[in-house]
Length: 118
Image (tube, rainbow, N blue to C red; front, side, top):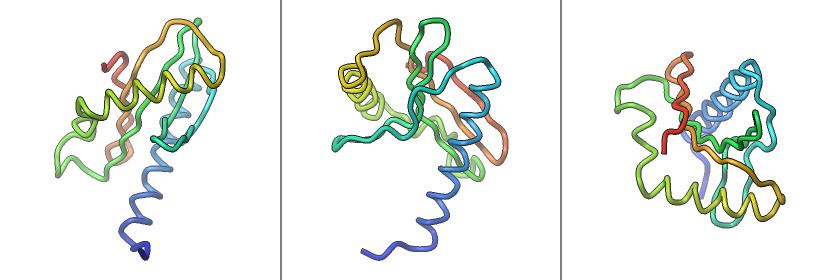
């Protein structure tokens, strides 16, 4: 299947949004443990650490809120998938500790982080 210009544009916006969110976390004193960790069943956008708490962050970047809030895309099904991926990441890396799940959105150029989103 050929990749369309629209898909490439969305991927570029997503990658840009992830870099912007990673910068936000770094400025807030977090250490980045992993970016775009992939396994057959999915991907975790960002894995971070601060004060012995491991944060799994799902990033959603949108040009505008025209089609709703970006965070709304992280529905119950997506949350369960992220939790399962986080468990796989923890097993694969041997990390352990308190865990938190954040959702970060980039709308236009504005970053918003929902700590403990689910």
